[in-house]
Amino acid sequence: MYCLSVSHKTSNVVVRKKLAFPDEQKKTFLDELFYSENISECLILCTCNRTEVYFCGDESSVKTVETVLSDFSGIDFDELKKYICLFYGDRALLHLFRVAGGIESMVIGEDEILGQLKRAYAFAKDNGTVAYELNMCVQAAVACAKKIKTETAISKTSVSVATLASNEAAKFKDGELNVLVIGATGKVGSTVVKNLLSHKGISVTVTSRKHKAETVFENTGANVIDYDERYKAFDFADCVISATSGPHYTVTYYDLKNNIKTEKSRLFIDLAVPPDIDENIPKISGVRLINIDCIKQLANENNALKLDSVESAKEIIFEEIEVLKKDLAFHEFLPCMQSVKNAMPSDFSEKFIYKLKSDVSAEEFARILEIYRKCGENN
Image 1 (cartoon, helix red, strand yellow):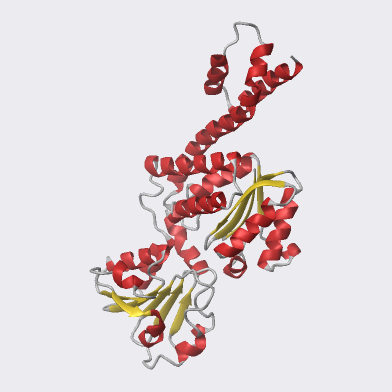
Image 2: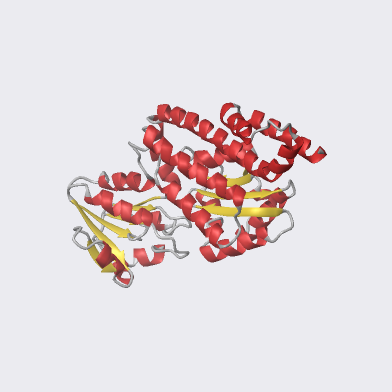
């Protein structure tokens, strides 16, 4: 298995924006990889902070994925390679488990990534581009992540990007605070609203398309306005948080400038990739803009508090990867079991193989199975 990764650790939001593919494009992307000659399985994970392709194939498959990713993103091949981290074999497995467990996240231990990984796998499965190996690897990584959350404190004090953004808004000014949330019915947006409503003295208004938000936020205390009326709300808002998954700006410099009449300080927080908010709005007097890369700085203190939990999580990951590698090796060996039994003495027992599987390391088990396999082939 290979993993090709472009993340918040290697690139900025401008680069990641080009790699944030919508579902229709992801389907075409996966199809192009899957129907190439050198790739047998593939899935793509796209979040605000990372785009990663997990795939199985020969060595030439790496060049195929890099080329297709360059074509789909419009990033020159040589430039794209500057942002790529490539993992293969055991390193790819380790990276997958670290991603699922929240260790590789901008905010260590955040909960969103596990759901995003599960959806990415389900998308690829529905598209017919995953088989046994990626299935085993992803399912094991998901189970390991749940074990980490249960047995360590890595998520017990979890602070997600949405929570950090809400806290930043809450401390923006003293006294009553009016916050407008665009994209409130999405995963991140709904968490933002929930966190904002937990603070005293904050009035929350959310935008709605086709009255969806009216149902979602009924009896929560949040006000609901039509999405097309958002610019009328900008004048009274002290803070605007936008977290949609759409390809278009929700706030542009031109429309914002023409719709605010009251002079005061305003905070805009953009949690979307691609960005929701025009980067030129700070040219307007009193306007400050925070984007997803700025949140990265806010996460540093939170991450420092979790270092002990990370070490515990690493130990769990090591143990679970050992189990997975044995299961993968045994799956490859199973078709040879009968021929090996035929080549062995009459007192040979399958129980012996299962005993080895539980008692030796993954590397030792794989070597022993290879010896037995050769015995079966020579019989």
